[in-house]
Image: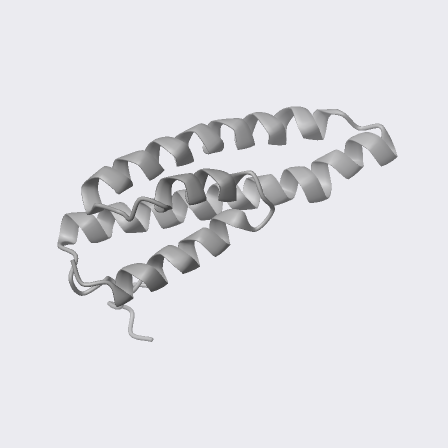
Length: 117
């Protein structure tokens, strides 16, 4: 891959601002999804198996802030790129499930690449 190429491939029929909004949603989804996996996979076992509750305190707080930011970015992106009606509920439900934001991102991008607005 060339250094000038973006990791996120832009959707051809979306303008630059819409592609930027979609990229920010993807980044927030990855951050929120990763924080949730850290909370479930590392912080909670530390709390309940090794009696170290501090991990849940800090990771949980970070996850909470990232969750709120993800929902705000999801709504802003939905307004900017005119997402399908199913996208906002699917994004919210996906944020409550492990690996949900990653799956939502994949499905949304696949749908947007196939759809011609």
